[in-house]
Length: 127
Image (cartoon, rainbow, N blue to C red; front, side, top):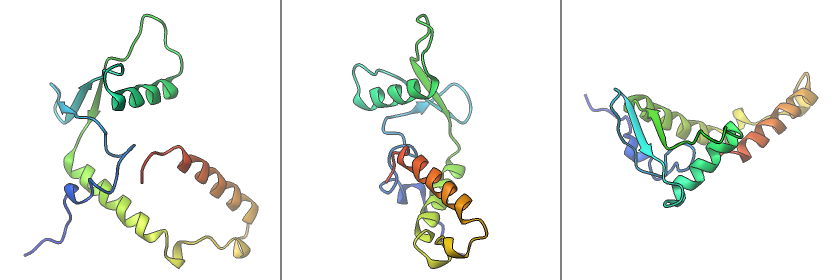
């Protein structure tokens, strides 16, 4: 039997930013985790990530700093995730997935949801 499934490497060039780290992660001491020592003053990608983390967390007490990140990494799940993003992005141009506000029972609410999603999309740094 021949498998038609794609490899993660098939998608690496397609997705950058929030979905694919722009820095090197190494194996951690914990199973299924990867880690990276952050050096925001020496590495631009680290600086961007550090700034994003600080934006998410808000101000930290002066005695606390982020010097390392760890991420749970499951290669199979990650590959499926990338494949699903690829499928979803292909579908978004199909007629069946386009909003039809004129036929909606509550088009005002639907418009609010679409506007909110558009706002969230602007905060994501991919493609």
